[in-house]
Image (cartoon, rainbow, N blue to C red; front, side, top):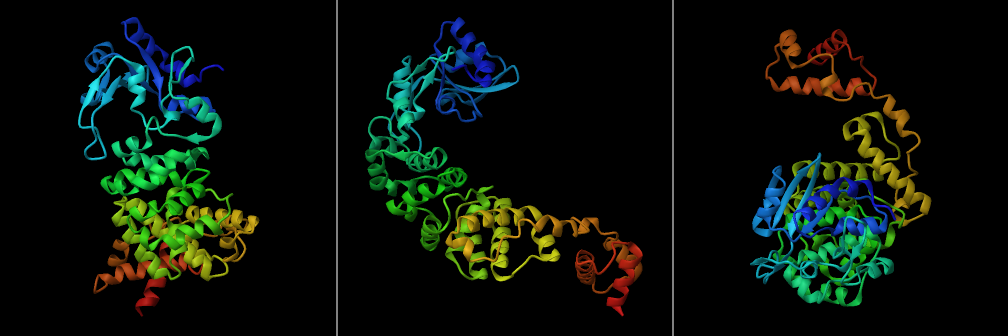
Length: 415
């Protein structure tokens, strides 16, 4: 098997380390994904060289965490995290080691990693170094902790969420000991910052086996450790049981919205839960707004037979299209979720979108200053009201987007 081009680009980094007398290997997820034939996005390197030695060999670098042995090497347009072989002390906060010790043995470095499928190293010639049967687990589709799973999860409780995320992404299963440890130690997830859990959860949503991951989360009770999930248990069960296995999410915001929608029948309650969840999970404002928009789409789509041009304009073509594509898959598969809606409008949606004359209010032929100039409205709040009314009339095809006609329309409102 020839090495992927991304490894060829990184080989000079390994070669320079070798020439200087140090060991160096590709390591972790890039090796795993290479062996699985999956796309490789980042190259990580592990080396016997200490951080100061790496810095000297590669003048162009960024210190990401020298105390933990990691230097970001900038070489020939590429960025490579090079980390010194290390062992780790106790994790008293269940998140990070109290002490890191640099070592000279590759096996000792790989021993500290989370799962066997990630504890793989590979040299510049493509020879894989596998001390913990990670390749066999790749073949068997198993996620198995390196060494004792209780120790691995006690060191960093986020590894339980990572296990579920890998299950979703790779369509693997947890081996019995690893799954039992997850069930027994799930309470430790409370020690982890919600921002770190959110990163793993968002990746979980986008995997092809997201339902299997959610099912294990639900059956193990791990969901009870997550914010807002006490109000989402019914939706979690619904997604696992009533939505087709063929459904894939184009983005995690729609997945979150579908979970909330499946938990709350009433739109206002769903919107309130969406705001609560985004706050408790410390989501970005952009993600919060996207989730609320998808909730609007789902509730409106359930309650009305077809889209009209004004609704499509307000909610946005792409989010509506994403929901219609999801419905098309669900209805083709005949699942319970799809049956709750009228037939998918996937085919007619582009035609409706062509009827929308403007992309946003910014495209209107007049602005607030034009209204002030012609009407000097009092109170000034009338400016926004009249613009809103004119905007809707334009979108609905009742008014041409021409300045003189819009001003005449506003004059009629003011008469």
